[in-house]
Image 1 (spheres, rainbow, N blue to C red):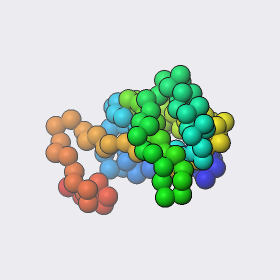
Image 2: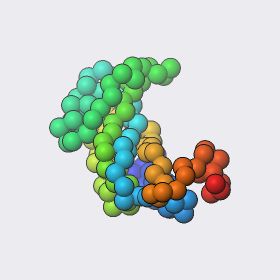
Image 3: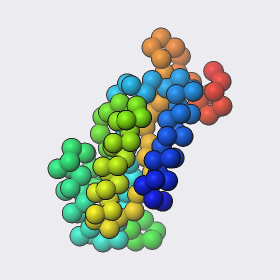
Image 4: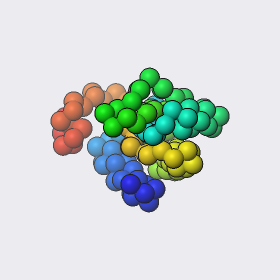
Length: 127
């Protein structure tokens, strides 16, 4: 997927989270998933992510398609500006090293004092 498509996907996800009550300004771990064809690419990319302020989980090994997997993450707010800046940075490093961007994730943070919603509550917007 192109950066433009990933940004559009991110904006939709953030709008859905906001509608469900996610506290997007609250810091939480935002993670990105990337993959590379060679050990050299994944090693150079991991070093680049770390120099750019990201933590890297290198324990993914290779997948069924012989691609090397990385989880790139850091603690940050999930507001639109911060999330887009993070996605742009990770995507640029991934492309520079010949990798593929495979998506993002982050935990849902409920408003203070409210009970956390279960999976279906978050999915359908019900308690």
